[in-house]
Length: 427
Ligand SMILES: Cc1cc2nc3c(=O)[nH]c(=O)nc-3n(C[C@H](O)[C@H](O)[C@H](O)COP(=O)(O)O)c2cc1C
Image (cartoon, rainbow, N blue to C red):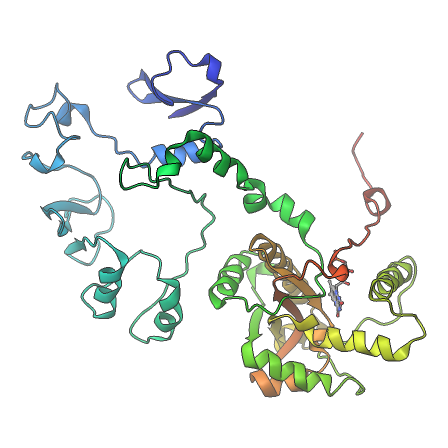
């Protein structure tokens, strides 16, 4: 199949918004007006849902049993065809569709001899049937209010499927059932124009938008959002695909407990699992100083005001009041290996951490990766039950950014590419 986007004025004639032309027996071309379907990626996804039916059976030149199949499929009386692992057996309108195993299937045969698809007109009865064991599974998304119960229910397995597909907004244009103002094309166009599509889908945008957030709103981050972010972040590459990362996610009363406990430690020497950076040489020293000074300036903290500096440090220890923190841990054996220190697993965790932070931006969340989050690992082990066999590398505080706070309103500088990149073998 070929897709071609054309300008509106090239459109001859303009019967609908899509034109399908047969090129030869094995190729068809779909033409659509550029921009009409928002983007070209959306177009194939819609039209691939259409079924392709063999004309020699179903068309007017077919066996004549049924020429009208696409208008009234229920009245089909001929033979059902297909090449999949199951074939059609029975269909009861508004009730069920029964498939039976196709023993002539070319691939490995599936175990179940029959598959029954029950039809439910809405989610209420569907999920009651699932809870009552009347059905074995559903692809439908669990209602948000029931999600946590389902995860906790030992009789149910909840699968999380990363959704990178393009979602759509549907308008109900039914003349009586629909919402009347939506009949107005200009309104629909205005809604489409108001959706910031790049914001939603563009990774480049996310890289540009991410920055360390140091003031959060108290609103909790729903657990399922944190799960989605972590699920997607797991696609990070890792050294020899070892996937060394493990996460300990604290929110609710647990993060409050940690906040309280570490606040009481502020004057005590810390003992992080991994040593903190020592003295920096140039140009790193200057860069480090610049961010520290900038933050003091924004917070109105004179350099010599030790009390204010301590209060600011306390805010850091308290995750800037973020409602959740994700600790990234690795197995101790990955880092301390016989006679070597293996820093590659720590490197891998940096990759997963960046994934988490970029994804969080896409969900309207803010993050800050913090050394300050792991200064007192004993407290974390006691409160979260992290065993000694795991090293706690870093914490990512996560929550909804308080965009009014000046501390979130500046961007850090970067050295120019020319300062950090040298090119070899290029003109
Ligand atoms: C490994 C690492 C540890 C960090 N630890 C802290 C921290 O403890 N406290 C803090 O305020 N910021 C911390 N940061 C945030 C950095 O200061 C920040 O990423 C950097 O200044 C660049 O700014 P940007 O993230 O806004 O682009 C840390 C960042 C990294 C990568």
